[in-house]
Length: 236
Length: 234
Image (cartoon, rainbow over all chains, first blue to last red; front, side, top):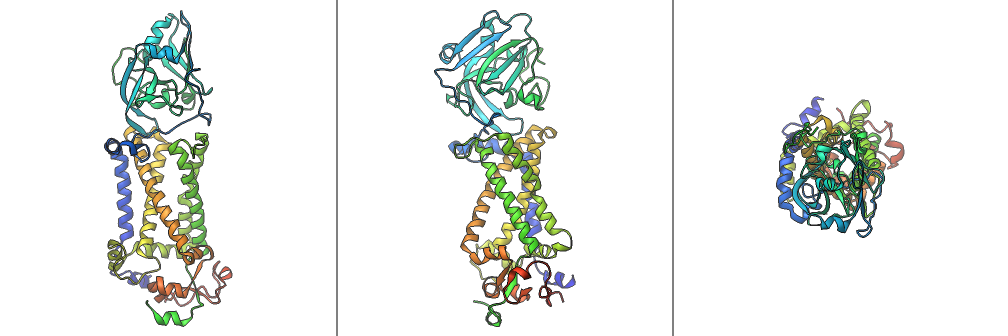
């Protein structure tokens, strides 16, 4: 042991220092990475979809496949406790008054895409047209993937920024992002923004969706609170 | 280039570079890294050369390999079997002024290299730190409920950045291994020729490392043969 210590005389403990330095960098990344990502994300531009920090979406599928629905054959069915059940084509939706917004897309597991541009029809508009019956208390959503489901309370569904989107990032919603039409609930975590939207059903009570049955909160407010950042009465 | 006497002494002598414990740890670690890197691609890009995989299954493979990642290193360091591994970790950790200068000038200064050159040492330190950082950030991503959202976003960013550097480092590591077949071979059979050591690791050779007489590495490198404990620890 003493021979060994002797042989290390005059040497520098580079290993320990570098290890601690890198670990500290990692800890700083956890604490400050959200801001760093915002900074880099705005600088990276088109590289952002390739490099960490940019406008990079993680593509989730529940079924292991990406459903393909052609734009011509796409149908959105509004049914359940409504006076006027209806089925919309993509052209029908595009002919309705449109709503655009730029919002961060935040996944519950942490990844975030800053400043995503969306365009679509307000859900509240579709609900008004359908004539929601007084017994309805919640809205359930179905997906073309045959597996994913989501739900919102009626007051949540009436938030002005909850939309049925057909444009994203300045173009049509692509297949991997849930096109041709998906739901967007920007004040909640990404799993609430159901992809490949096929149906809107008015129901009496909230039916927990796929991710909620797998342990995610039914009310997926971004900050984990019980209400929206953009206050609206009687939401939970 | 360096020690002529050492080269002349017995060019057929084979020196023990990595014992069985170290090689096993290295290859188990390599297998885990490979699996983690392959599963990382579809998790990050959504598909793998256009093929979409069931995300949950891929995620579970990634998770379990990640949780297992520290095991080969920690096991190889612990216990009586980890003596050589611990000695090498010590080598990697302690640097002479010459080594620091060599790395700082990117190899332009003269250096009598140790068992590992400063580039190899730097790679080992980075890999160890990256494992720690990726383990902790990965833990936050998996059990995100217990952490604030800003931490989850920070952990995602950190995990991605370190993973990117790991991809670059591993590519460099494999590239250097393939262009240095003697070094690569020693990670399979455990030994390396004295001639190689005289050229690439003279400081190590001067310490009179454990040797294997006839170059028949397979019998000698496992366990402690009669030749595995020479006069080294005086």
